[in-house]
Length: 113
Length: 112
Image (cartoon, rainbow over all chains, first blue to last red):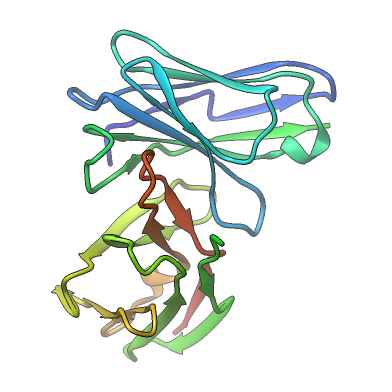
């Protein structure tokens, strides 16, 4: 158990809809990263937030956006859902961008029909 | 480019040792990781090694790092059926985000 929680656990949406996924923060962990893990693949980096500001982004379109709140919890928003967005979405906390370890939550499984 | 490679499958008998291999691309990576993922679950950190080390041992787990060949391995001694899972190696990117770059995972099946 890492102490990182994500909600919801599972979600089913249809193409074109919008979705918001949530991630808690452990005390003192001011940096959060989001990853997308498609079936049979390793996680791919979406973006990172550090103290409420985006601190880097992977190769994902702008319809993937995020927020980090003053308590360091975070949201991932995806607009105009596509079938290929079906995946496990993982968030990871760390204590600063230089920290040597990221602690992953259990993930949210998103299915787009 | 960013490409961490792993073999897809490994099958061993209970009680034997398992060795999972990984090659990474960024010779300046400072940290390399092994994660375990059980079906339907998130990622569990098993161990990590700092780049100035050649070997790290943690109970049944031994990590070997060959920086010259950019090769990382995870040895699991006395493999148990509960070790059946997907194992991911990851390197920490050296850019400002220090994001993790994961391999595609190795599915370990332990036969009783």
